[in-house]
Figure 1 (cartoon, rainbow, N blue to C red):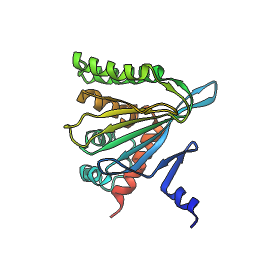
Figure 2: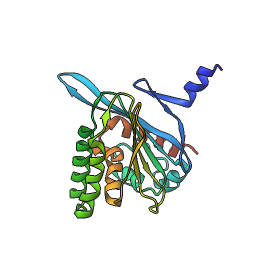
Figure 3: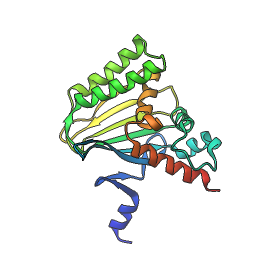
Length: 216
């Protein structure tokens, strides 16, 4: 095969944006799902971000043995709960398609995470403070097409999850998510099954795991 074919095999294209099938973090993480966030306005589909979800597959599979042989994972909220709570390293990679102000993204994240915290009765001063810090991080950013937001959730609670933002011509910026409940709800925003911000992404994750859990 040519170099180009090899490269194609090593990446998955989402809306023309290449996502590597594997990334190196503390462990080698595999792409288990991808999709977009979009809205429909006057019958036009506007795509905002392409998303890739990476995790330590071996660790996750161990945690998800209860779903072995089940094919309908998309409708199974318990499966997504288990995925979010699985104590394995995870990375969410969000690549900007349509340019917006970072503050707009920050507001979406903040209101979605706050609603989830309130619903779970976990929204106290500490959560509010940690969430505000994340929202403030995005205030000054500008989401040009091709900019990348990365959410890194370590396998253990000893290290804080971290959000990084990279855009052309600027240094990488990072912020720690210093509250476990906020970190969990950020995961749920992207990985929460029915209520996730990108249904294409969670469907892709459900299909990947259904295939992995059904193979002998």
